[in-house]
Length: 238
Image (tube, rainbow, N blue to C red; front, top):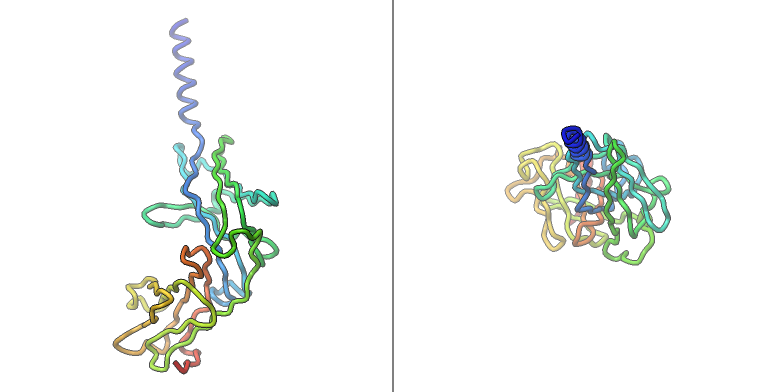
């Protein structure tokens, strides 16, 4: 009897050890505003809520079934299957999440508290709360797609990029087709800095420049502007 009891205990322990719930932590968000033409498949202006978090499962990531994101006040919910989650590297952390949460055909996003649940294939569940309260909208219930006022031009000597007509904290510039600039990555410029593309000579007239604007200091509100194709750009008078 003792051997049978011990065997049963071992089986129970093994089952429980192999059935641990997933873990979710470090939730964060961005509000992404896309200008028509910023990417090939973006034909109109859109606004999305992007939510990312650290996600893990002792039984392997493949054990995760889905993530449910619920806006507390309205009870609107979005269910994202595990295979539709994206992964990004940020500050030496691997984050999982989804970048296309919206209301009204991507014309507004809901602000306030969100409940995020992760569920595995055994229906084990873990959850975390997230408050979406970007600078300037701390008490607002929603954020509608704003008018995109930013205007981007190039100086006459083709060395400086100019972003104007609306306030911003910083912007990030990338040469889409020329990895020689900025080591193939994005370079960030604060709003009080001149956006010098190349000190030594004008940029190539065939360059395409991607422009991302961070509206607030926390970089919670991000604009993706239509890229500049220098083959068709009218030069500014700066």
